[in-house]
Image (cartoon, rainbow, N blue to C red; front, side, top):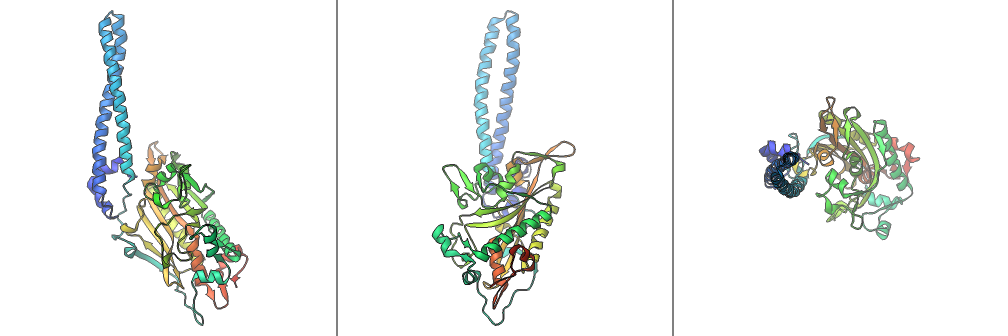
Length: 425
């Protein structure tokens, strides 16, 4: 979340920048925060004054008793008791004000960087780079991945419906082996790039959801167990980043580089139509996530390194891809800067998002209280970053579609050692 200093020191600038995200409640919420903060500071000053008076009177009572001024001592005791009661009331008010301020701050999204393009949706994102030839097919008609999956008995969507419901596919045979191969390939590439592998829980408490910003913003999109108040994770970003909640690191520990493979769960309420067919949008899917905790002055360089890492994965998979700089209206609630990677789906003849790589600056860290000690002993907020490296469903979809031939599906060279086969037929 934004800090009070960010909001109170430059109110108009914050409102201006939030307008790029088309957040229409910015001025309203920020003015409420400023008013509540003024009340909080006034209440804190009054409370401090009352406590100081209690302290001073308490010291005087003993002196008055020793000098025989019993009546004055009793008056001082009564006055002290009243100040203590007043202090209790002020303390309760102060707690209520702080909670109210925090509740408002949680509703305000992160500020987009100046380099974020103007725009209201995906159609306004800027293509920064496009690599690779769009596949063409001669002598046969290209099939979409859901038909290829059925033809070669790789994925059973109907069986998933029987077991769980739509959006929960069952991978079989070489389809399951391809899935496992991709997981191991992505993890090995992350380890080779210096990331420490983490195997976190796939359920988290509400504090973790609030820490990374999924709550309250994405409350309706997360699977929730009301009895235990636990949430199925939408991404490994949530448990991995929360490792550093309420932690003060040393500057020598930074940057921290973690990676994790997990199953991810998203309700995707309201999703329907051709754009969600097959593997295009699922309720449960596999993903490898990379997470960084860094110093503010190094986070931009870390973001570029993460982008290069994802780009290298797509190049090794021999997939045509493009990189998009997201506009303000298409960015997430928590991101300050985000780039999406898309691969081309040959049979569907459209681009499919396979990764988002985001810099959150200090926004998540402030929610998490993730801090570090500088070389001169000051305590500062860290910067957090994360990215998909990679999400598997649409990678599998584009691998199947783009590599199909008249007599089977070719496996990219980098995956053959992990698959144990070079062709699906």
